[in-house]
Length: 304
Image (cartoon, rainbow, N blue to C red; front, side, top):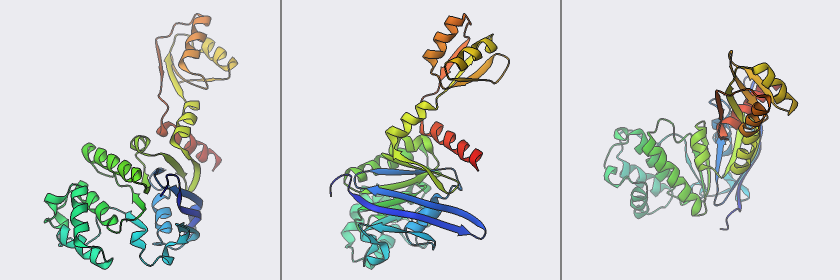
């Protein structure tokens, strides 16, 4: 399977709960060899969209996996593996036995279970009951279960929730490795800093609508255009006039402190020098997915 091949197409997903439209015309495309980050605040509609994609919820729109709806595949577990919050199973079952039971239902040999337990680092925990697994172990077990059918598509809903830094780093490295093997990986999260290190493509969801869908590199370029510079100076009025003349905007946040948008710190420093206004403090935030998301979310709020 070549990198960049379209494996999943979700088109015009929508869902109404009572009188509330939770999701409206959400579309996204997953490609082999790429991790797609599905980002947004809690309640933005990420889980609803994923459930619609997997056929776990009725609603509007259609999702095709390798060109066909998921129900058209005789063994959907060989097409897509999903992790929707740890491992799904009876709390009293032991991990290896549980995975073997699931594998048997998909005609997957037991040796695949043992190989996956080793892959996710749970060989020593294979004899534990599911109720005895830590949160990080449960997430790894869920991933192992999702990979039993060796699917080309992997979907994870908020997999980093509650994990410690070590587990988050393991998850990031593991998902990158899965994409490198040619899988299309979809990861939803509200942890924007972590997603910035993981995703190749980003779909930003705000209030049930897609407000951006593009490569992470382009998102960060757009975030740079929304850069915020903070400063402290004794004459904000004079500096504000010069900033405005250059197309920027200075907003006071205190008697001598302010934020500036539309100009970078070098431009502001040069303006301050020309105006002979000393700067006590000058700092520019690094472009980030979080800064971009907060910007578009604020725009959505104003539009709504």
